[in-house]
View 1 (cartoon, rainbow, N blue to C red):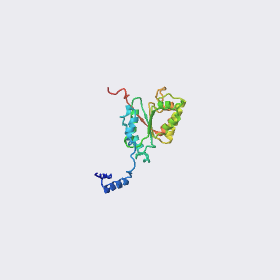
View 2: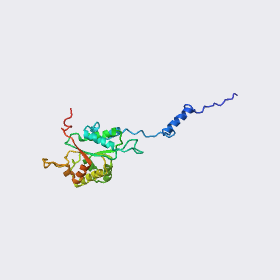
View 3: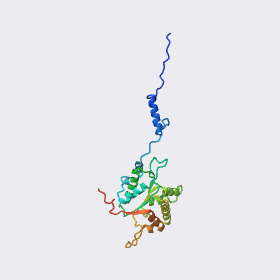
Length: 248
């Protein structure tokens, strides 16, 4: 009976020679990489501008900051950005900076310019934690109701590093809305948090203005108006209503 010789199976061999593998390992260690660590299951972070685009309303996703005063404000806020922390993906972070009050009639591009400023800051590679809301929506969300925590929402809005507060003065004013506005504006004034504010109303009454025409000082109260004057540079936008004059 013939004997069967056992089959010798070759042991697994490393790819490449030992010298090459040693060089690769040394290079990885010099770069701070651990080749034995498992790959992360999550994908790489989405670029800042792409992430911002997903949150910007569709009507403003192509917005650009064109006014010289607004581009100058963008430059000021960018210059005040601080070096990144350990969890900031290597991007300088917006923490403090000047604020801007955009004034003008309906349709002159205030909200467009404001979103353009946010897009410019994110496109510059800065870490921008931002929030946008109309004043009316803010009041609606922070109105006390069962099962909700409006105080927590107001605190997040107050403390967000960059805030767009749209259509200030457009909502009906009550003692409660005046207090919400005061708390928001006062916190951001005291902590020098950059804030973009738009309004259709003039900041204060001027000679020759019709008596029944509302102004921010009378609509929001002296406490808020004083702080807005102290924290915001003012830019007046003029021209026809762009929404009514768009090409067919």
